[in-house]
Image 1 (tube, rainbow, N blue to C red):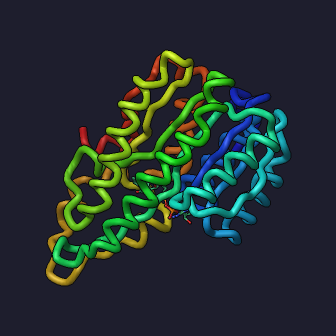
Image 2 (cartoon, rainbow, N blue to C red):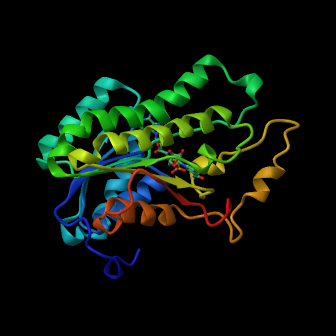
Amino acid sequence: MDTEAIGRRFAGKAGILTGAASGIGRATALRLTAEGARLLLVDTDEEGLKETVRLVGEQGGRAGGAAAAHAADVADEESVRGAVAAAGERFGAIDVLVNVAGFHRVVPLEEVTVDYWNRQFAVNTLGTVLFCREALPHLVESGGVVVNTASTSATHAHPYMTAYAASKGAVLAFTQSLAAEVWGRGVRVLAVSPGGVATPLADSVSFPEGADGSYYARITPPRGMGRPEDIAAAIAFAASEDGAFVRGVELRVDGGSHA
Ligand code: NAD
């Protein structure tokens, strides 16, 4: 990334970013810190987190940007409390919360077990809810912002990903209602919905035997899959003062595939 060409919109700001060990989360860590953010990076993947912190260091701390790793499972209530407390102690304030951690499986409904359904919601939905709830007092104090990662699957059909789509639909509904609940307290909340982005998550998609995957070919963006950096740039806009008038909505970043 040409860090000289971008802004310093997060100079003096601190926050938490989940899912930072890979893909969109890593690109977002690089983008926000390049613009001056000090971030606590949360993920279950410790090695991936270390690599993201190394890459942030390589960028050179422009505008005071820095990152620290905090291994935690976003679906675990105590771990989320611990991560928020760690960020509060480290930075003295939480201005930005970006929830990116998530996963999916590609399976027909007949193979959606109760365990899988519950884990899908525990990570994608409850993880987002817990971070918002625990960070809220800090965000009220700082007049902060929350960016949740939904998905175009929340509003457009994604066959063989029913549990994932439902978990992201719940993220979107939660985001909209939370936005209205807290805007009077000075906290701005919105969601970014990526379309197809080339990351380990998207690359792992393979269709079950006999499944018709042609639908996905039709919703591939006209100019090909997005890059994690495309979503990171949208999250940076959404989380910055440039996005101040954007709240309670889904910012869809899908290269036009659902237009
Ligand atoms: P990715 O697999 O590259 O990164 C996801 C990260 O979340 C990983 O580092 C993983 O370790 C972490 N994670 C998973 N479960 C966790 C847990 N329980 N606790 C803490 N961390 C956990 O995937 P990505 O493509 O970068 O996806 C990032 C987000 O964007 C996800 O929420 C995903 O659903 C969403 N999304 C991605 C696409 C796409 O096409 N790539 C499209 C729409 C939405």
